[in-house]
Length: 429
Ligand SMILES: *Cc1c(COP(=O)(O)O)cnc(C)c1O
Image (cartoon, rainbow, N blue to C red):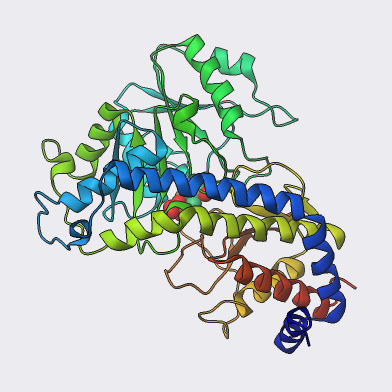
């Protein structure tokens, strides 16, 4: 038997139906050019990271664990310089003490807004967990609670920016604009860095000193350029997504304008202390190595997303983005229009996870989310959505948001298992 035959047998032994394997083979043939482009971008990203390591002279001494106050933590400081180089910012705050993406966003917003200021979202309602930060649900301790108001301009029906109303929404109080690159859980496309650049140029033409923050979650390394290169003042994201490469055990980043990063550090620790303190607790090597692997991991996740889009589209589901569309994040949305479809798909993703493959995901309430959510993930790092994972709010159109995969091979196996579950549940013939 040749290796191709052996591979087919391995998938059959693993429980994947012959017909589905044929569809997978067709997918890989038809997606050849797209996969090639994804790999080219991964190589560009790899060189970008490698250059940043060289420029900043990363050495083994940077992996030393520090504890307590963490004064003179050279490795931590160097990691921040490397992030600043990769993402083209003046400075960076990259810390284990930034607990999550939401925490990084919250830190940057509170740091750079003052009572009487107004925050503007020019692209509709932001990610669900920002509701409490902004105060949309009157949460205690929100920006609203501190006297920071909020204004939002929804997208046009065709998901383009509503430039006229954005112009009208910008006023004397507007101090910060938040642009979310990834679609998150919303029914709208992800914005490319190019599109974000156009929006930023428009905003700055209306009010030149207005600062722009981009929520960069899930977008890192998907395109050749990052939002700071398109005119953003700061970008914010999570290390248990793309830029942690699957190795970062915790953390978030804030990169960009030096003054805004400094204010963020004052907010995270204390005024006067800022970036000077904060022990690395031994995570430095994983953060450096995770960033080093990130371009390759993100490429694997993207190939998985494209592959899933192709197969589920062929099976008659609505997929967003389509398999041949340009991408700016690693998220793939699939509308199942039934709780059973969403649940069966998530069960398959869970069954293919390296960890906790034997548990069954169930819909439940989640802090920060306004409807029940089903989540499938069997992760090395708890909650890391750069690992193969799938989640969806239990509401019409029962969309599965699928992302991640530490390797392309695992992403492929996971998707095939999930589709196999759809067959077995009688949801597809
Ligand atoms: C994941 C995500 C967040 C929040 O990150 P957490 O680490 O889950 O808190 C914010 N915005 C977007 C677009 C995201 O995808």
